[in-house]
Length: 226
Image (cartoon, rainbow, N blue to C red):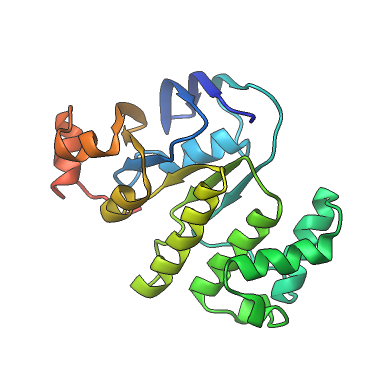
């Protein structure tokens, strides 16, 4: 397992203030915070899509990781070909078989030959998760994966996320959905204006928030749409 990930005095421009974190393998980590708190930027820093302005990010070792965004990018090809492309880029063996299995895992086997861009929003998000599943990542970063989806599609996505967790993938997810954080999280990292102001097991975070910022957020007294 590639974790832990250590962030030592990492900052990014004026969005993320200097912070230090260690992300361990195992429990699902939920990143919560109001609009503009820096959730998406922190996720991109951890995944390596952004370079920090200062500080260091240290992985224990190299390993497989994947990231799924709120609005996944779909290639102009079939659902099957989208997964196959990701596998071919990664140089994965037996790519066609693995692609079929990944689509089946997220419930899209019957749509394998459907143009990816013609799928519904929930189906596209499941396809993005299938691309990640096919790579068997050790760490999966999820940035607001259900923010624009209806309740039915959200339940389907959450079922896939639980399957990742059950298979041993470390989940690190940013969400503005408090119910979702309770359902899927083991621990919460709460960001406020680019700073980590609280970190706690999910039950304690919601039952006994330790900071006024977190307490106000839970009560809905701060804007929390992403």
